[in-house]
Each structure stands twice: as C-alpha cells, then as structure tokens.
Image (cartoon, rainbow, N blue to C red; front, side, top):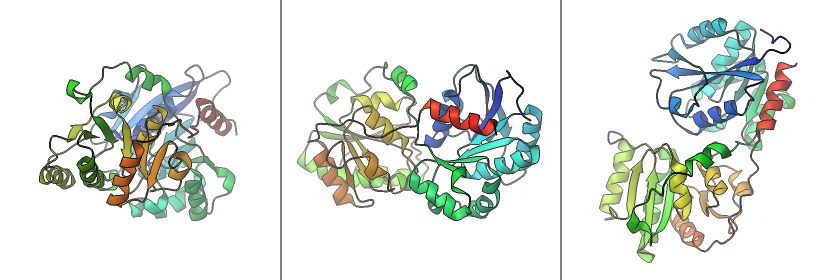
Length: 363
C-alpha cells in the first residue's frame, strides 16, 4: 500500500465519537497535514457518530464503524474498512484503538503511527497493557505527549528509543482565534466578579469536587468571587449529583455556576480571571494549555511531572499538590496576585507532525 510518486498520501484518523481532549487533538493533528500532500479521512468507531463530528471541518470525509462493544469483532470490522480504503497510514490517539490499529496495519500491510493519550501506569483499562507489550513493537512510530510518558513506554515495551518520539500537544491557533470572535458569555452582572473557571468533563479524576470545596474557603474571604464549571453534566451520574449536592449544602448556588457543555469554551476562558485545573490525573491537559495560550493565571495540581515545567510557580501560575483542598484554596487566593502570565509551554507545530509522517512514509 505504498504511495505512488506525485500522489497524495492517504491517512485514516481513527477516533471515538466522544468529545474530549484526545479526540479534539486527533482532529487538530489531522488538520495540520497539508491537503495538497495528504488525503485525510476520519473514521469514527463507536455506538453512534456522536458529537466529535461537529469538530471535523467541512471537506474531510468521515467513515463510521458502528460497534456496540470494541471487544466484539472490532478488529475484524476495522480491517475490512482498511482493505476497502487502501490507505498509506493509520493513526490513533487512544490506547484501546492503538493496539487494534497496529494489528490491522500488520495484517493489511500498511503503516501506522499511534499516540498515547495517557501514561500506561495510569490507564483505567489495565486489560489493554498485555496487548500494548505485544503489538507496540509493530508500530512504525509511537508519539508520547511528554518525556516521562516516552520513557515509560520504552521501559514497559522494551522498544528501541528511536521508535518513540515526544511531541507536545499542538495549539490550534486558527480555530481558537475564530472562537474568540464570539460574544462574552458571562451575564452583565458578572462585571464586578472575580471569575474562576474550570473546564473539564465531570469526572472524579478531573477533581471538580475538590475545586468546589476549595472555593467555599475562597468565597468566605472574597464574596465577589464566583466559580464557573464547564463540562458535560449528567444528572443521572452519581459524581455529578455529588457536585450539585456539595454546592447546595454549602449554600453556594449563587456563586458556583454549572454551565454544562459548550463547544466554545475559549470565549468563557478568555473573559475569566483565573483558570483552575484540580485534576487527580491527566495525560497532557489541553484545556490548561489553551488557558495559558490565552494568558490566564493558572492554578494546577502537580498530577503529572510536566505541570511544573509548563506552569512556573508564582510566575504564570500556582502549582499545588493533588487531592489537597486547602492547598488548592490557597493557590486560588495567590493566583489573584499574579501579574506576568506569559506562556512558557512549547507546543509541537504542524511542521513537526508533517516531518514525522513523511519520515515514516518514506522509510
């Protein structure tokens, strides 16, 4: 399945139908491949087409593999589609899809690049790890989001170091710029508030329970402080209900605002005063990086080592220990005093990804 001279190189980008950081980052990477050189198609794999399709720009073909359970016939159906499409390369950013795509690539004799969206030691699905050790040796390249992740992959799989590369998450500056043209979403009476914002799906690992508890202390000292929580909120979910209960029991209903999901979080972050990431676990947090790009003071937990390299304590943000409500509250108070919030994070560029893809295709 090798490309012919002067022909576009065909790449299939596989992703689930959900909307999260890894899903959106997959779309961003795909958009970075020049359309005059690459033919890019997206393949959604899941029960429904879901919300992620809204983030795929017009003009990109989308295929859909309906699967109720990835464990049942998933590899077979993916293999069938790949044989139909005859691509030059496959790509995925999700561990459970990575192991299947690598196997499919071997069976269909095409190339494959996979990107890890989380540390192997922190994955919630330990059942994938034996398959990682078995299949990753057949991948053409593996992308790690930060150096600690790269070293872990090499150690766990025994792969040669040159097969695993570190590429930080890129920033979609063009898309963010378009989103910032939207109106200020905060209500008119929010003008005198100090607005903290947290952007993440409601999940225990994202730590919304921690930031609500921390905010209770912050609000006692600053009655003009408000907290806005952006992310899909499900009333049927026990964790979501616990957050609502905490807000109500703390009598903070007028000061903690559950906004819910918004496809344009950038308009909220750009008009907020401080971004808070209370996570217990992250891969490489895109929402945090976007907030730094927008010049916001940051309060972030030390949930992965790279946080201390991209958030310089007391310079462009405050770094605190994870799962520590008192430290988080103190960090939120200190963040109000920060003046210089320039971003020190170095994102990967489109040139980085084009170079990587071409180097694999030209081997």
